[in-house]
Image (cartoon, rainbow, N blue to C red; front, side):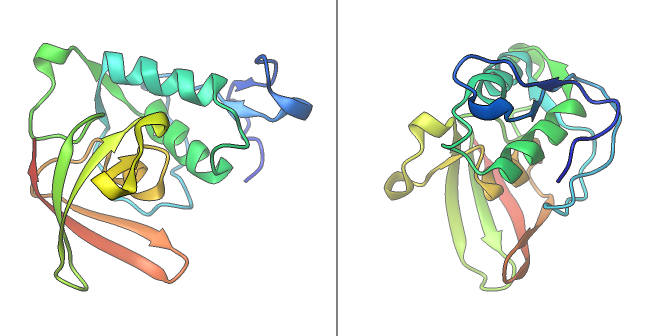
Length: 164
């Protein structure tokens, strides 16, 4: 994915090697949808504090630690975000540190996944990084919604059964 016209890029962050360009998210900015993740999502609703944490990861994270495409997907979603206070954030929407109980529509397997920052990810505890494709895909979705995203083997479909 190349640089997008009209998007601000951060190429001068400390520790960034050879000027790796990472887009700087801006809430409520309209732009083209991500090509890597197919999602039918209303405007992303995210807590202001989660937005601040995630944009810090995007701007200052070590680009070698994350898949660049996943970072771009998350930045894309954050640009569409409607920021709300912690008090006004719906408890049925997946945010950072939310646990989502989801059903894989193909296998009918039920999983419990907690979306966390990359440094807290631990697959053995079902803690998935928000920068992993499934983490980015679930972020901002509400209980009862179907989530679709592309994986190398094709499209995956999950239904969110519960959020807590």
